[in-house]
Length: 218
Image (cartoon, rainbow, N blue to C red; front, side, top):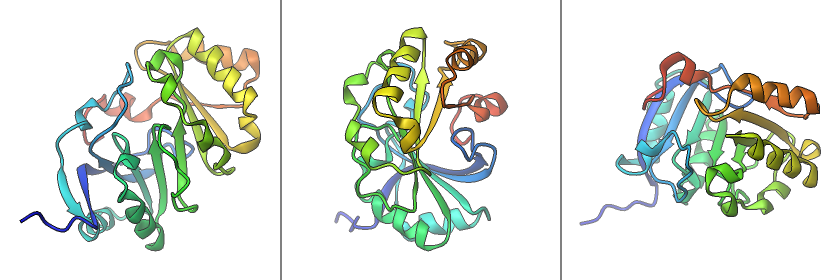
């Protein structure tokens, strides 16, 4: 008999680490990584989470999160919004008093996400191979505490990102993050472009990769 999955999610891993990105970078955080993603970005660094994982009930996820003793929880993937029941988990975590962030690839609406959740929404530049999947309606939903993230692979990606920031007046809507694709674009080069153009973004490098490399559980 198939178990009742009304309050279950396919979880790839739950782990305690330092937040490597976003405006919470550096803070000890529990990561809840859901299995699966509908996108296939050329530079994806979490392909290992496309498949696998185990079904977990909200209560068991909450117990594991609480066991790590940190107020910060990041729900990520894959693409967490691909599993619609994640909305219930986000509500539960907020109601339990956690500071909750959601990392989403930007191709699924965030309209139903609890407004107390810090939304970190990717916009995919052309170099990702998935630029046509961007859901620009999401930008109208974001508030000042939310963040839009651009991961750029080359100058063409940077110019595209700069154009999108201006066209959508993103600096007036939310916070903006920008980082280079690891091992493809020099962080120094991207930093110099940002400074030259006085771009209103927060430059970042994926902290966790410098500490532990790119592997599950970090």
